[in-house]
Length: 172
Image 1 (cartoon, rainbow, N blue to C red):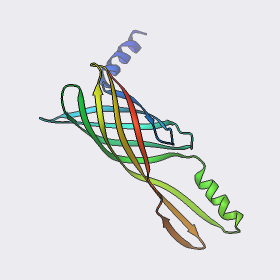
Image 2: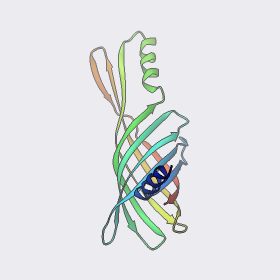
Image 3: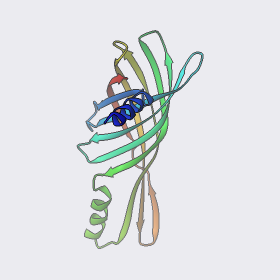
Image 4: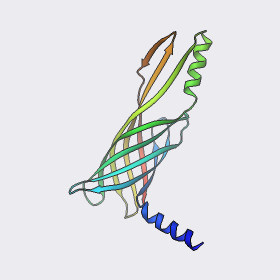
């Protein structure tokens, strides 16, 4: 039992960082859970790395992302951040199956592939105290649709998923 407690204690010190909960204020109302870890402190800015996962999506379309997060302090309480990274579709909400069924309803056979890639965003973070913060930001996940129909492949250009988020963060 002692050994488990010591390992747990050492592990908790090794993952010091910031956990956050994001709520999309747009129509999608996506709730995201994420983690940022400070990687390197420079003279005027900090580089963090992080990841997040959509835990509640009314549409069923959920992303998981990893990213680099440059943070630029404006003063002791306010920071400006930028994120750039790679996102994958963790759950397409049945979109590919619905599209394939729609094709078969018209007597067509084909396949549908929805994919993602680049994710980027920017925002402001306000430190309420040493542990808790609030933020506002926007994040975009790119979406690509590939449709194969009658032996032809068509890359559909669909809108990217843009989110306007409110963030609640806790640093440990």
